[in-house]
Length: 354
Ligand SMILES: *Cc1c(COP(=O)(O)O)cnc(C)c1O
Image (cartoon, rainbow, N blue to C red; front, side, top):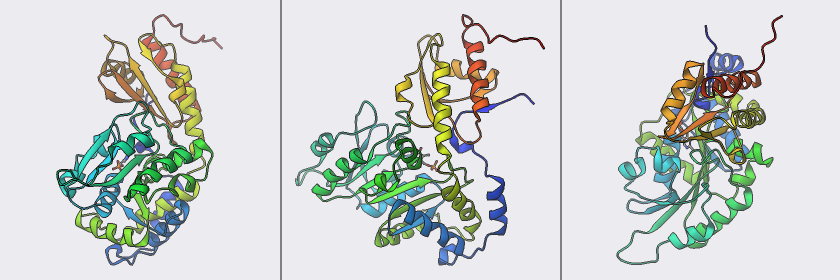
């Protein structure tokens, strides 16, 4: 079979051999009845890792975020978030449909909202206006390139919300990528916020699942919301067993994905018609901009023909994501293949006959 380098998303990671073994052997019970011992272990360990009282295993990051928004707010309130955030762009307006919430997007250059910008967006008490009920932040920020919020930036944003009397939810789908890239304990990124969701099913390589963490009363409410949304699972320990391996064994290796992404961006720089800003590659994502008339779709098709799969972000923007299923050698292969396919002006690497 021809070689394929899967760079569309880190969600394409396959469970490891040890995950499959742990899944087969997991002790399980009915988790809707709160009787699955493996889910309990996962929730306990996850809460401890992010420094919260309790956590809840949910089927997806989208459901984890929605449970958080529903548990923090009341219908009719306004939620402040970044304009390119996953909750605003990619979660089917669930917060509005299910929660009756108004999402108020704030524009930024690099995904990092400024404390003063958030302060200005907070509503004054006024009979005409909705109440500001929640601030959502995203770390790493997906659509802005996988960039990180550091502990000081996180704390500064949380301080503004807390001073105004409302909580902060962190969409930390890839918060462990941020912690590894910044070389900080993840608790420095989760400590300032009231709740955090993170995904097991992305770079951490589990087949399914995310966790939502916060105070015990918050997680009690979220548990009801999960049930309402249809996310109460029965012998979910089969999945939690893989998740335990994710958080215990798969975090440190994310550094390798970051090195690979950096090398990929470096190797693809200077392609005719494509701009990549190497300085924006902080974690496992590489975004590129095609110069018209070259479209991202056309770029993607040419890459696909040579075995390199990527994701479209907009008509002229594309994304490549590194993960456990992409080796350093795959990256070299992808660089060479894309350069050959795209750039008639760039000579192919010398092949010496042996
Ligand atoms: C993937 C992702 C989610 C949602 O996770 P799913 O499991 O795909 O529902 C939420 N936020 C961000 C930033 C993501 O990248």
